[in-house]
Image (cartoon, rainbow, N blue to C red; front, side, top):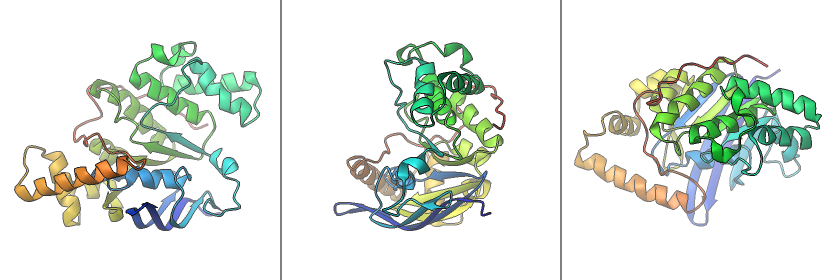
Length: 296
C-alpha cells in the first residue's frame, strides 16, 4: 500500500491574466510534515487551497489518499471527510458553543450519535488544552483559543491529512506559541501535515521538509534544517537573509521586497493571502509549554 498522501503533478492556477501557480509538482508522504514558505504573493495559500479543491486548478492533477480530486467525477465531499483544514481566520459558528462547533459536522457528516460526538469533542479539547472551555462561545475566547478550537474541530473528524493556511498570522504575537505548541505535538503524534507558514523557527524545528516558493514555482525543496539554515538557491538565500536579518537590507533586496508586495496585493485581490511578514524567532512570546497529544 502506497504511503503517498498528497500527489501534485503539473499544477497551474490562473485568475484571469494573472498566472499564480506555474507547474507545481509535489509529493507528501504519510506522517510527513511539509512546511511551505516564501514571500507574500508567491502562491503558497493558493496551492494549499487547490489541494482540497477550494480553488479549481486551471491545469494539472491532484491526488489525495490515492483518489484524484481533479477528476470531474470524484466525490469531493467524501474525500474531504478525511482532510482537516485550519484557516487564518477561525471560521467558528458564533452562535454555537465550543462543544457545538466540534460536534456539528460529526453528527451531520459522519453520522455519529450526539453522545459519541461529544465524547470525541471533549477528548480533542483536552488535547489542545481547552477542556474547561467546552461551554464557552467563540466571542468569550482569545484569538489563540479560538484557533485551538478550530484545530480541535478538524481533529474531531479523524482526518488523515491536516492542511494549515498560515494559522498564526491573525494572532497577537503573545498568543502564537500556544497554537504552534499544539501543532508541534500533533506532528509528534504522527499526523500528516501541509503547513503554509511565516514561522521560520517552526518550519525548521518541526518540519520534515521545507518547500520554498517564489513567483508561482517551487524554487527549493529539501530537508527543513538545510533549507532554512543553508539554502541552495540564490533566491532562497536572499529571502531567508531578509527574514532572519531584517535590518540588513541592500538596495537590490529592497527592490525584491517591493516586487513581492506588489505580487501579494495582486494575489490577495484574487483570493490568496500575504499580509503578515515572516517571523524569524521562536514559537511566540507566550513561551507555551508542550501539550501532549496521543495517537487516536
